[in-house]
Amino acid sequence: MSNTSPNQKVIQIHRKPLGGSFLGINNDNWKNAARVLGAHGFLLYIYLASNKDQYKFALSPAAV
Image 1 (cartoon, one colour):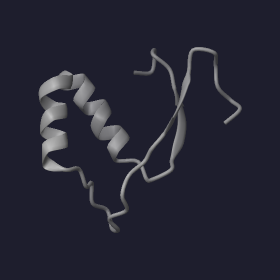
Image 2 (cartoon, one colour; image 1 turned 90 degrees about the vertical axis):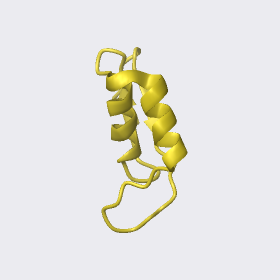
Image 3 (cartoon, helix red, strand yellow; image 1 turned 180 degrees about the vertical axis):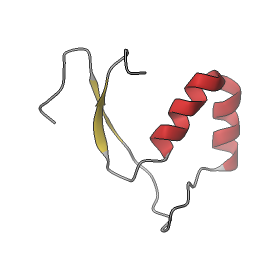
Image 4 (cartoon, one colour; image 1 turned 90 degrees about the horizontal axis):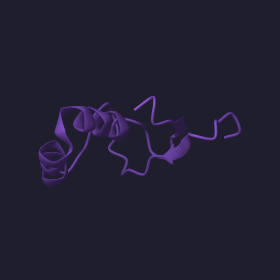
């Protein structure tokens, strides 16, 4: 990924395939994320979890 800025970090998603349009997150994982991350952090967690396996993108602190 060559179109990144110095303040961006390349993120790659690693997840187990489920098939279909399901968002598969272990119950303990999403409950812990909701408790620890707060509302905005949890929304970012859900966004990251909703991407397909091996998806790569650049993310900056300003975008977060």
